[in-house]
Amino acid sequence: MNTPAFSHQVKRISPMLAVADMKVTVDFYVTVLGFTAVMEFPDYSIVERNGASIHFQKATDESVMAAVRGHAEIYIEVDDIKPLWKHVKTFKAKYKIRDLFDRPYGMTEFHISDPNECLVFVGQKTT
Image (cartoon, rainbow, N blue to C red):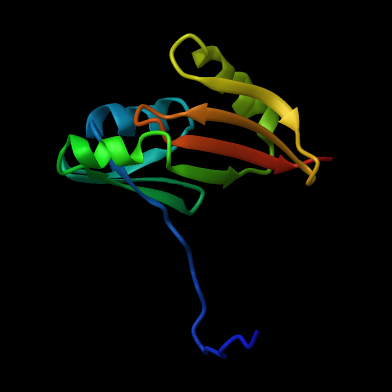
């Protein structure tokens, strides 16, 4: 397969997720995963951490959320997963969380479902 040659550089890719409740969603990413809210509006918000961002757009109606719940996933790669895991596991009573484990493809991960049932994979290269 031929890949076209482009002169521009991709600087960053930011997932954009549909959400049911903006405040609850932003609070989850700030409180649980340590992001900072850099823009907050009722219909659109952005959180950032270490130059990575996630954009949230308020779903226009419940049919959008019905299509999204359980079908959206994002992967966040970190360089030191253990301190984050120590913090995140304190939320086990509130969120669906899969404990820290090693993957055969060389990553150590945990998984957590956000308030919109988006599955968030958090991983680090296994050392």
